[in-house]
Amino acid sequence: MKLWGGRFETGPSEVFERFGNSLHFDRRLIDCDIRGSQAFARQLERVGILTAEERASIVEAFEAIRAESLAPAFYSGATDEDVHTLVIRKLKERVGKAADKIHTGRSRNEQVSLDTRMWLREECADLQALLCSVMGHLLGLAQMYSGAIIPGYTHMRRAQAVLWPHYLLSYFEMFLRDWERFEDARRRANILPLGSGALAGSGFPFDRQAMARDLGFDGITRNSMDVSGDRDFALDFLYASTVTMIHLSRLAEDWILYSSEEFGWLELGDNVTSGSSLMPQKKNPDSLELIRGKSGRVMGCLTSLLVTMKGLPMTYNRDMQEDKIPLFDAADQLADSLLMMSNVIDATRLNPARPAAAVEESWVVATDLAEALARAGTPFHQAHQIVGRFVLESVHSGKKPSDWTAEEMQRFAPEFTADFVALLNPAEGMKSREVPGGTGYRAVAHALARAKETLGKLIV
Image 1 (spheres, rainbow, N blue to C red):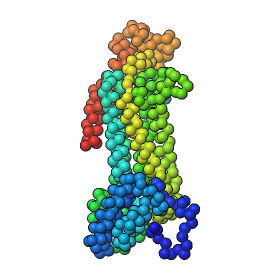
Image 2: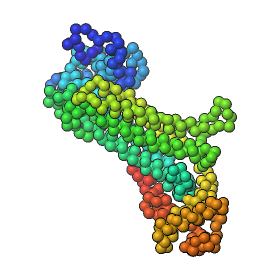
Image 3: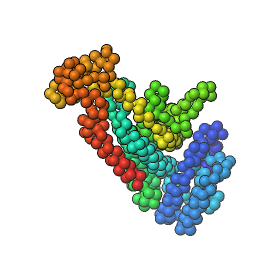
């Protein structure tokens, strides 16, 4: 059935119908469509369009359709233009002519916005739960090796020593902000558009606030043209999804490197790796590589809708039908990636001796020495020069930090008093980094406790 047609002398061509059909992807909105239509039926009774008996039969019929829609056979042979026409056709099969009243004062423009907003707010909650799982596994792995020391990197060069939990907490903070972005996206989507009509507002005195309460929305939209003409709430969701995938991709990249033979820090579980069809020795980090690869796919979803929306005249244009595929694909890929990352983290083990050796043999203590000189009264620029020459001398002579004695350090530079030799142990220098957010032992312990408390509030 069609929701339009009286103005046309002939019907659409088969090519046009096939080109414009969206049922194959927007059918996943059916639950939202039915719940929205049930709430709308209650408003139609309120304004006198439906009798109490008609409203009851329609709401009951929608409930039966909702149950039937869970089975794949429900869609078998369906040739409807979209999910909305499918639902109305199924409704008419059950309640007859009363179904013709269900679109009184309602446009598909606002209906699509409603369905998408309802779907998005629920998808945001699901993704937030998956983010909490990733964050929880990160904290578990941090606690497992709470005293491990690793080199932190800038420019992929060993820079300063940090605690392993401090490193993992950096990603915890990223994922926490991602959780907040989805909360923002959910809040912006959770505004009721029903009552906006096609673009000018409904001609019937619907109680929009009552519909908002009925469907669990925080409030109502303020401008009917805005409802019809924009999808920024969908862009918010896609942006949040893209940033989350970028964070997942960066963690994946780290662990692809850290689990390689060249680093040897991490051992990835057999259940999240694969072998080679030719080379028997291989244990490939395919799960992480797929996460890294899917980040580009989700980024493309955001770009796709941005380009679709950038030049549309107000208000509704059929171009906007193209918002669904990137939305659904981004949500699916992100959900799968978050679930996969939780599994990877759970199956990963740190070999603390390898990063500890990397710390011990490198000059990650150089900044500790320079700052100690500055605390002792040497101007920092001069201290920087002294330590730089000290490192250069060590490189030329093939010495690592632990090879120096206090006497040798003092002969090199009288500013190095006897107590400076202790700072050649990276663990000693980290004790000076107890500022909030630093990698000092107490600061990290406090940060871990705070992260656990924060996560507990999010899960509740």
